[in-house]
Every structure is written in C-alpha cells, then in structure tokens.
Length: 425
Image 1 (cartoon, helix red, strand yellow):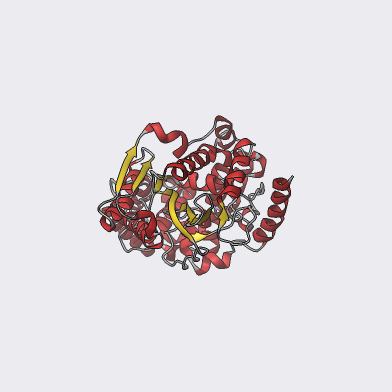
Image 2: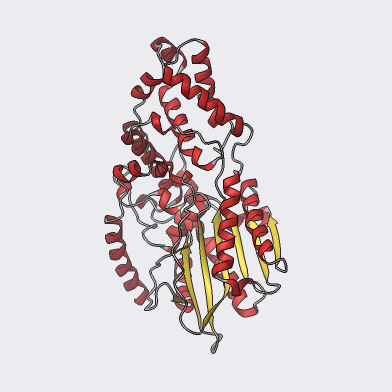
C-alpha cells in the first residue's frame, strides 16, 4: 500500500509538472536548435552538484549514455536534397535563394559525404567533457587503480563514444583499469525491445498509425518553401516531391548544430513551420520509445533488462567493491525508455493525443545528443551498510517517485525496493 500511495502522490505531482512544462512556439522561436528534437546538442552549462550529507563519500557510479553528436543517419539524408537542387540549378529552375541553398548544401556535403550515422568531432568532445566532469565531481570513485567496466552497443558511433569517454578518464588517471567491450552479448540490455513493444510501435500496423498520418498531414505545408526555392512551377510538378524535400531540408537544418561546417539554414523557415515539423518527430519518438497511453507501459518496459542490470551491477559493486563504475553506451531510445520506466521527472507521462503532446513531453528535454543517466552511490564512513544514491539526468540532479527528506539524495534501500517493484510488475 505504501508504494501504491506513493505512486498516486507522484502521479498528481507530475500532472502539475506536465501542465507547467509545455513546449511552446515561443520557446522554439527563441532557440530554433530545440526544433531539432533528438538532434539538439548536449548542454554546455551545468549547475553545481549538491554536497553530500556529512560523512558520506561517493564510491560507485552506474551510467547509461546515448552516443554523442552525429551526422544524419545516412548519406542519402544529405544527397536527396542536394541532387534535387543540383538538377534545378542545371535546368535554371531555382530562385536566387534556391541557388544560395544549393551552394550551402554543397559545402555541407563536402564534410558529410560518406559519414552518415558517424560520431562527429563534436560528439567526441561531448563525451570527453562528460567524463572529465564526472571525474572532477566524484574523484573518490576514480582514485588509485580503480577498475571500470565499459560496454557499448555494436553500433560504431556508440563504441567511439565509449572510447572518447574512457580515454579521457585514462588521461586523468593513467592507473585506471578499464575493460572495453562492444559485443552482441550485451545487446539484451543495452538496446532491447520486446515483441509486444515492437508490435505496438510498428510504423505500418501500429494502432496509432492512421491518426499519426492525419497528424503529420496537418503539420507539413511545403508550398511556401517551394515558392522561395524554385522559379519554375513545371519543374516542381515533374521533379519535386514537396513534402519529402521540405522534410529533408528540415533534417539538414537541425543537424547542422552537430557537425563542424558553420552553415545555417534557419533563414528558410518560419517559426511555426519549425514548431510543426518538430511536433512530427516529437510524437514519432514518443510513440516509439516513451510511454504512449495506449501502450499501457509496454514500450517503457523495454528498459526493464537495463534496469535489472543496473540493480545487479550495483549489488555486486556494493558487496565486493571490485568495480568503481559501470559505464554503458547506447542510443536515444534507450535513454527515453529508461527515463520513462524510472519515472524521472515527468518523462514517463502518458498521453495519446498527438496534437496535445507538446504540452507535456519534449524529446529534446529527454535525450539531446549524449544524453545520459547516472546513479552515483555514496557510503557512510561510519556505517558501510548505510548507502545513499542520487540520480543525474544530463548531469542535472533529478527526482524519482521515492520518498526522501534530503533530495537529491535517496536511501539506496528505498530506491532498490522501488526498482524491484517496477521489475516485478
């Protein structure tokens, strides 16, 4: 009953948080990079860590991180728009703005060609920075010749993120022992989806698909943009899929913040267009990775294997002291799953109306590039069995629905019981 009562209290609290956390047109207008959703760069400003209660020192960190900033997923995500504008250029079908956009795309492609899905140099810098701040904030964890476990999914950008992160730790303390692994053996918890969740999230047959089609149609209006780029309506009629080109240019626009070429395309857009295009991706990610109300928790439950690994790894570290940190590297969807399952802040909110989702859930808040969840464990010097934990999301101290009178610190025994309840239901 105590846990059920706690959940009810938390649900009411999070309802209030959600009502005051809506993403607005004004917010995205003020910072257009947020229209990038999961392409938003990792934050660069961080609040100081709250000092641990007297007598407690950090001794173990459990971590899961998304890979850092990357290029768009495929080469074609750049070349489709470039090829259309190249043909328009050759047929004298572009406006002056269209010609300028064509030149800008050529500059972008000089860097991006052949790098679809790769970790970008910024992604490397992000993970080096996260590692350095972790080391500086919790130096007791990384003292002497501490042993660390580092595992990534088999996707190269995740492995490269792991290497960037751990190499920085080794630079700060060359005596660290770090076991690097990237193997299918660990995909069962680093990047896992249940058959039930896959049935719900299926982009062709999922129960949400028809409503999403109508929602998408209501949000994408390419005619104005086409008129600014093309001077020949006949060329557009015969050669251009306006919706596809609009979305391709949007993807390139929002992806520029993650690569080195200093070119911008935000001048192409009206604020409402960016907001609406963001809403399409926001809802798509919500259905696929968060806690859509019609899914009744089955998508968030994809993170149960990961949460089980977090509990088991912590139990072992507490009992043996053999491992100072467990570092895991994966993908945006896994971070979203975990945040929803753990009920971090309002990230597990349940909504089923795509037109209303922006009022309570935003993908860029949950998983910008290099987004991470850290559980930092503290032990009482005088009583080794007395252990506290605090939870960080993107290095910010966050709430979960567990009672505490010393936030951001929780008793590990209470958090562990809460996690077990999640795993058993």
